[in-house]
Length: 148
Image (cartoon, rainbow, N blue to C red; front, side, top):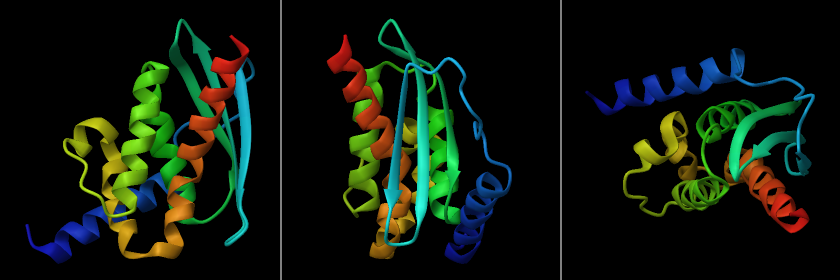
């Protein structure tokens, strides 16, 4: 597949998640909730997690922001459901490495659709947009572990 076709496919997946977000809703029985803001571009995301037995039972988000932050939150909430908190922490670190240009082996398997956000590394101003939801999930898990 030609590079331009691949880039177009990536754009389509990102736009699809932004226009038809997954898990963009209130999670009534959330165990953890954390809001983060990106003052650079005005993104505001609240991540809500339902955690039981060390696993993410459900994940949702609300908020507003750019296409990258919204699609990243949609992809992230899809990918972390059913994972252990340790697996999610590993995923968050891998995602952060990936969008800052580091090589992440097996990124597609580990991050699912979110692996296409690797191209964000070419646009340093967009890295905060892409990582906002992931950082919020990480911090929410840390808070949950403190409260146990």
